[in-house]
Amino acid sequence: MQPDPRDQSAERFLRLVQAKRRGTLKVYLGLAAGVGKTFRLLQEAHELRQHGVDVLLGYIETHGRPGTVAELKDLPLLPRKQLFYKGRALEEMDLDGIVQRRPQVVVVDELAHSNVPGSRHEKRWQDVEYLVAQGISVITAVNVQHLESLHDQVLRITGTDVTERIPDQLLKQADEVVNVDLTVGELRTRLEEGKIYDPAKVPTALANFFQAENLLQLRRLAVREVAQLLSRQVESDAGGAPAVAAPRRNDDRLLACINSNSQAAKEIIRKTSRLADRFSAAAWYVLYVQTGRETADRIGLATQRHLLNNLQLATELGAQILRVKDDDVVGAIRRVAQEKNATLLVCGITREKGLWEQLSRRGVTADLLRAVADDGRDVDVYLVTY
Image (cartoon, rainbow, N blue to C red; front, side):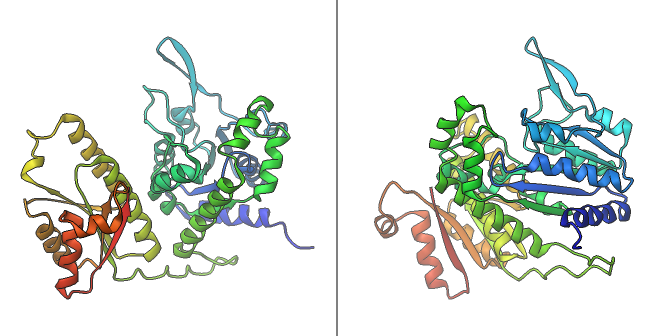
């Protein structure tokens, strides 16, 4: 009889838990709500308990689904912590309670959740990072649309502005990432049968986020994301053989060029992050050239705040931040690109006018393209439309 692959997965995760002092992180990644992530979390909790592991359910959201609720049986569940915010009693995961209890493995659902103001951390993914740093292993779950670098793609695909997001770096640091897959037809059938949302919400969901084409594209994103992560992870065989060295990163160095335009900068940063992952780049940078028109006394506080937030976003996605002051933006970009041996420049261009019309006129991007073409260096330019 062939061994159950779920048992093999649990055993492999158990070996990781036993081998490390730092906690181990395992993430179940899905294409959308209803694919079975929480069910899989609970299944693995049962399997680990059968192997003698001390497992605790730190936070589980069943959404009242009977099959998921049934899986709670015989699993220790930590009571939620009650917090008061704006006169309302709200419940959150009891982070301090988990640390005090110190299980070997804690199950934490809804990774992208935003905590109630007043919690130790603003986001649940920060709670998970904290638990791992405390030596507690975590199994968690999230949907692909919550990945920071995919925000713009998800917005274009679904028309939904996903506000709860996690940094891609968290998945890159995970010891295991598992794709919880379901065909588009199966997922829509589950929705129609009332297994995901309340029946009154089903027609709206089918006509909007759960359109077949939307789900198909989200499924592709999830599969691609896991494939890229697996290609870089260090893996060991079932017998505990020495780890195989991860693929060597290539020599590509990417330079994202931004200004104080908040939305353009966000899209350029996210796109460059995805490109850096795809190329397994040696490094990637975000360059902000501050001209005399963008000094602190000439741009508003809101613009300054958005700029700082974008630079923070770049840091969370793994970029190195470069800031220079120069009225010659093109000259500054060329100089920094040469200093950093950049092989790909990532710049923005608007959709408001025709591409060729914009490139035929004077402007930073158009002037940069001409300068690169005349430079003779082996540098490519990638244009991000916004």
